[in-house]
Image (tube, each protein chain N blue to C red):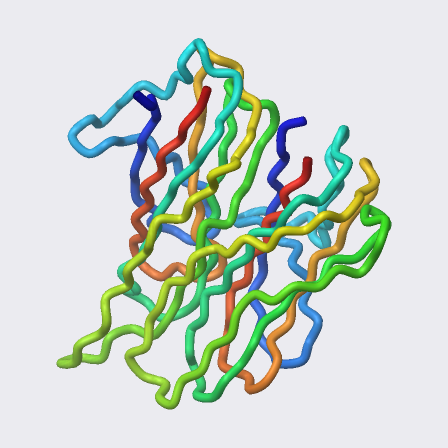
Length: 136
Length: 136
């Protein structure tokens, strides 16, 4: 069975707030848009995650994602995305690779998975967050 | 010898999936998948942005077109920061290669692939994307 790649993203703008990732670039009008488990998929094999941080405020913060819904046989599933810290709020810029988080979670084709993410710690500004679900 | 398809291009607007269609001096390289390929086995991509404007963004690669069954969207990175202040220096934004060694996406050999990339949320300036696709 080949793989299927499904992605959602959204900006996180507040700390300790469950932020739904329902966008995909210009596709915002149909939100909330959860991921539908592709036909033929049996397993959520891995997740690819990344964040883009504007470092608008100093402090340290960490990020994690949450997957839940009837598309997962065992819900919820959590994973880390990364952590950042800064002591100044000028002149910082950074690009972050997408990291692979291996999973092995049975899924239900046709049902949906809601993706959300949170910033914990200090509110560091606006942080773009993207999650790719890889099914097989 | 491993045959592959390499493409590169700019993203100049937010939330817009932009075709990645050039190869340096080759302004219109073939986008045809080799006839012998039945799947994409690996993807290597890199992205960086000039941070002409402050903010945060996620970078997503989209594989679609007649050669692909469906659409696959993959997070390849995130980035952000603040605009450079007049008279100051800013660190370079270096986007390392992101390797997807077990890509495993079915393709129709001989058909054309469409590769697009998007910068979500904030328009950070001009982003550069380079991607190599491997198959068998």
